Length: 160
Image (cartoon, rainbow, N blue to C red; front, side, top):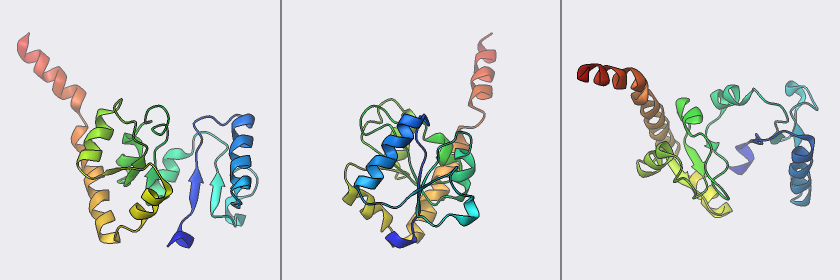
């Protein structure tokens, strides 16, 4: 299954120093890669792509099968609602206490905590039928929260 997977890396910061650091780590691990700006997409041949630009993440979520949301290995998880909007099963590190949404998705089976490469491989081996259930669950979770500001405003209006 691993050969059917493309790894798209979207660094939180796309400074030249950060991109160089990611490239170095991939080279040390002997992983072939290309950067988004180095080759036209239709000519890319690598399974690993470093997106060295901003503004394309939401488009990538639409084409993805799952997402690893960064930040939670060392600090705190980034926004899980963006990929969940597209129904993506989610993976992240253990530091999710800053995100009520991440905690709920984890408790309800839409977000997996990973701490090792084995955890990732285990998740990738979940049957496709289960992934489809997770996709539906995550999209519905986000949809159920829409309109919260209006509902809150309406409740406050009742007290005025």
